[in-house]
Amino acid sequence: MREMMRRYSEEEEASLMKEIMENNEMIIKLQKQIGELQIVVKKEGKRKEREAEARRREKEEEETDKWIEECRRKNEKEKEEREEQKRVDKE
Image 1: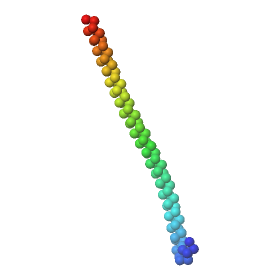
Image 2: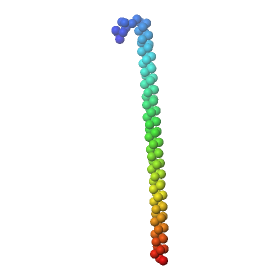
Image 3: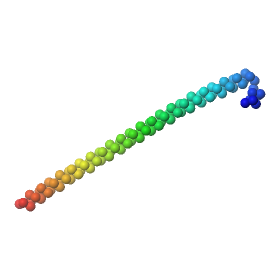
Image 4: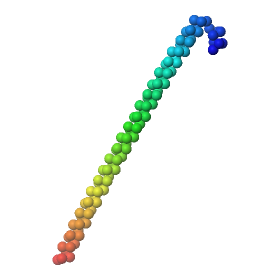
């Protein structure tokens, strides 16, 4: 820093220091924005994960409902076949 002061006049030094301060302020503002954006990105990622999980659960429920319905139909058919077989056996 002292070497810089020797090379520049007081006016130039003041100008450079002002520019350094402005740059530092800008860096701080940008770091804050980056932090805020990281929070937003993280929240968005969690939201997408929740949506994907909800879709997965919904699909599983649909598949389970289909399986249950198929089992119900199969049981009804088997019951009807047993009843029919009983009628045939009685005759």
